[in-house]
Length: 224
Image 1 (cartoon, rainbow, N blue to C red):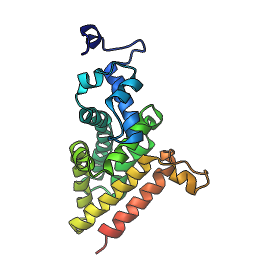
Image 2: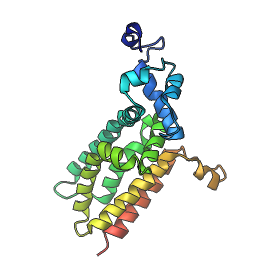
Image 3: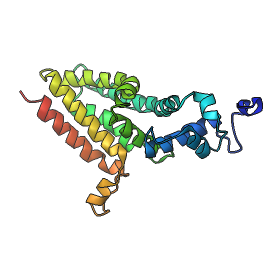
């Protein structure tokens, strides 16, 4: 049971609210260990809060996980949609090019200054985990990212009006997979390059990922 004094005290000495501390801790632990291997006790310990507070603020572990995932999703969506809307306006009355669509989708999330700020590496790893999870991918990716994805697909269909729906969606599936593999930052790239490259250097990888995805859409959706 959380005491009245404790539950009404929203911040600790460092000025960070206890709710935020719980989300930060959950982000770290879920990104490192997945959902099943993390307990509310571990989250509370890392957050340095009372054991009862994760449940007090969010409810069961599933709700903590969903809150962690939701927290940064809107920012990613807004950045990309803003870039897409700009591309659409600049191309009007024609549809935007595949290059401008791919730039709008990839550049804000791979080159933004936010990447080096606390929490984003963990959040990107969490997105990669969720996107590759049969348990969570369908639910959370659909809930928090599908409206944004739908807007991009509208512009992709306008760019490739003769593409089949199968080609369009499989191409998007490959785009999403390439991006979230980069998000995972597993160290595989480091190993393959004998440590000449860093999987954490998303900005370095941006141009290659961009050109790769443009070529993929051109090959699969632009064919007659």
